[in-house]
Length: 310
Image 1 (cartoon, one colour):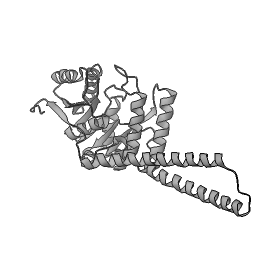
Image 2: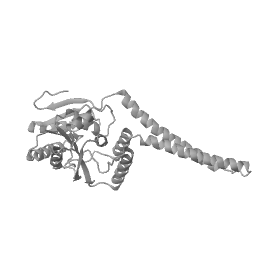
Image 3: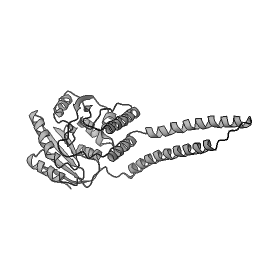
Image 4: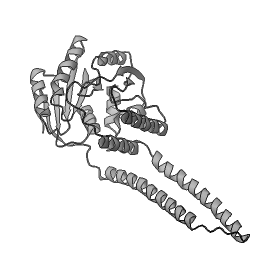
């Protein structure tokens, strides 16, 4: 059986469209399935839409968070709830084409344990968004040691991969990077990002920047290493400048450098504060991990054929 995990946050219009289209595609390909909608603390009628979809199709499962915990938490909640031999993650807005699920399943049946959806294009995005995404994935690809450019959350995982990801104790997770890190036998499926089936994007510039910074910090220590290299470079620069100053002083040609001193103080203070900020960011991540709080809290699970849990 294939478990399709569909995170949803304020997607009351998209839920019925996603349920109908995914079910039609999988049923047409004779693929046994369950659809797991994870309501990530929506403030609209998303949960009502999920219950309506469940009334029409008993293979629909609903998971409702106690509040908004974010897309990463929603995807892992779906993986925890999934009972399929393979699990796929699909956006509720249908920008991930459900028709590609059939191709993914066929590759999985051939023995591939991770089938990645790779973007042929990023659809209609602003130049700023496109440039920011390119910069982020370029940085994390170099830091992590594998290519994440074109990667997405649209992928299919074998049960053994799902179990491995679910067993990881870390709280701050980056799903699309962890699935690469896990390894296993891999295949790719290319797709074009479609237009939203309904509603509007919930990603603002601020939320995208926060998403990028959080995931960069949760998956790689590269910024901390950069702090070390910048510190070393500044130390070398200071030694060279100090030697030059002493030579000029001993030769009787000391420079009058009030402006230079001020600039050096400002530069060094700025670098120190920036370095402390990066170190503080990682200490905050450590603090969150040490507290050991769960990634999410589930308020209700609705599954036909079993008791509803809360």
